[in-house]
Figure 1 (cartoon, rainbow, N blue to C red):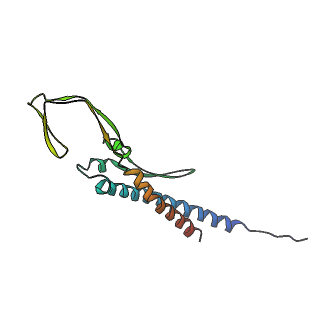
Figure 2: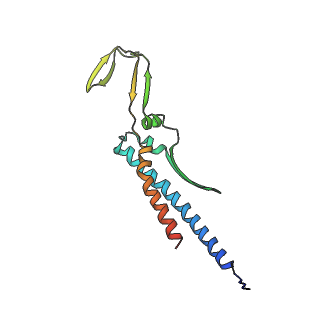
Amino acid sequence: MISATIEAGAAVEKLQAWREALRTGLREQFAQGAQTLLEFVRAKISGEVLQTKSGALSASLRAEASEAVDGFAARVWSDGTVPYARIQEYGGRIAIPEIAARNAKALAFAYGGKMVFAKRVAPHIVVIPERSYMRASLAEFAPLFVDDIRRLTTDVSR
């Protein structure tokens, strides 16, 4: 008969330390990832995809990372204060009603590179093309983030 006694206390302590180190690393990685993704998005709206005019879209952007019992999450979003954020991301159509001069003899606006003067403008549809700054940033950022997570899990397990 062969008998063995195994002391599992040290192994359990090591596993618990590994789990806590991994959790801490993931928490930090997701927080940093949210900020990095925010930087990617801001770069897109500062000339890569859109041209900054007022800075309102950039100011409306938020980033956060969160932790739950079952995992971690990071997100970047526009806080809703800029009504054109969504249509710039996805594109769309805007129905413009008839516009008529009220306090002046004519309306003045640039069209086709020329100044146009008119008493009224007929109702029309304006098509806004898709200018993805969020999804394009995520597609660019995701492989880098996955590599960072892989590196973290490899480093923690050593």
